[in-house]
Image 1 (cartoon, rainbow, N blue to C red):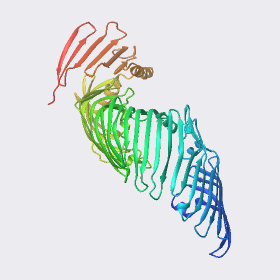
Image 2 (image 1 turned 90 degrees about the vertical axis):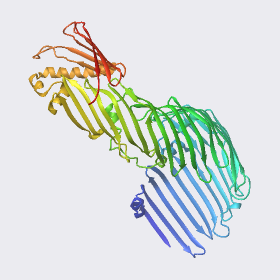
Image 3 (image 1 turned 180 degrees about the vertical axis):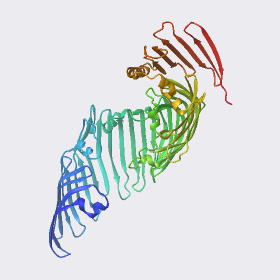
Image 4 (image 1 turned 30 degrees about the vertical axis):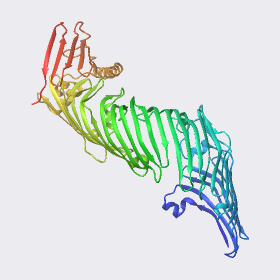
Length: 618
């Protein structure tokens, strides 16, 4: 019998195409054989000069099998991630199938090995090497012997280092795996491990792990992580082979972990994890989280299967979520379930809200776009179901120089930890917005979250303003990305006139009657850009500059007007005409409560007037 297949293109095989496997390479097979089924004689060779599996590459793969006189010899040679791999084996094909095999690698660079599976940080270095042998009858595992030696194992990143002090050795004999005393040392780290674990019979396991690990070492695996603190271990295994028992303790000492992308960080994590026969008990675990306090209690069972039963309590925790908002909250949550499916339920009370300095209303709304992408591959977070009630303690307020709102919330968070879904309602009781140097006051506002499958806020908001003695009202309804806007005014104006008033400060007819020259239009646009930059730099609610000097205007002027929201209740206004000295106007508006406000004005002649206003709805 002879077989010769010199060029099998793997990506063209039906089985590869049917399963959409990302495999590329050309396989060469040759084989020749003779003899009987009881005593076959066979020589076979498989060569694969280059194999690509997704973005992983194996080169120079060559495997050979020789069978004669009821014995088989196997060999394999390859080049993987800049290291050579060599395997040899001899097996008797009669009796108990006596075998003698070995597996050896040259020095393997860890950076190249890890790069085949994940992103490796710049500056990461490491090396390992593996040697293994197995000898004895394959049909009788009690007489098999196996030995594993790792002469070198180390890794480093920047000033962080970790590695084995001496070669790591593990042996298998008489159904017992024995780990020879090994020590791992590194930056702030010293961990000693040794022991034996029986895989059959009634022998007693004896395994110990003692030492401490510096949390900074985590940065070797994830450079974006900021970590510190110490994890101290003292764990022992005892009991019988059929019923092994673990006991010991893992102590967390001043652990701090944070990333630039996570909405929350953990500092000063302290506590103990007590390990018993079938579970890990969480004792006195507390941490500083987002400027508040977080405590954890409960247990994690690991036999007969992994089960969670953990409670989390937070007090005055500051959360940066969604982008642009800071939320201070109290929480009482419980996490129960398994790796296959768990639930996080409880209650969260919002104490206060604030906007971040770089808050932008348009960017904030984009987070709730209905076109949000869904992660391609599910992970552990997809197995955690959410059932959390989110409520405000009282009336919440949040302010920036250009936006101020007050209201309350009654929400529910469902979905999963990977894709949370918010439902419920938020009522906006009062507020204001500065847009294009025009101040808008909130008349009413309701934001509802009705979609149980996706966070999709629906607005029903009405704001009003005064431009050129016209009382304008704008109603906005719908989703952030598909808002329907309607306009009304007192005295009545057409929608086109209202839009012109909002955009240009004049009605359509007034704009046509006082059309500016090209130079004046260019000047207005240039000054608008300058005033916008100054407004952001100074943190002003509104800054307006009118550049018109002369021309055909009925009232030529160069006027500067600014408004600043000093507190949520006090608005300061200053206006002056730089072409007419002594024309300054100063006004202060103070909101006493929801119904009463007072306004004090000093005009250009030095006169002072005080107005009281009562607000009600009919």
